[in-house]
Length: 82
Picture (cartoon, rainbow, N blue to C red):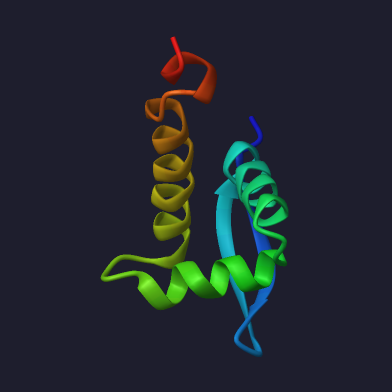
């Protein structure tokens, strides 16, 4: 059975590194970087610079989870006007 985790190479702060992520997290990162008008490398660099501990792949997963979790907890403007 093929692993759902895919190892990908990315350049962060001028250095090539690799991260192992499930497709859903990779797609989430692409969506976030697009919404912020930044490249994937820039987003990963931001995540890398702010992580306190753990590996980069874990930091990315937590960042993506937090990003989408916070979006679902924020009431939409339509609901706030009710």
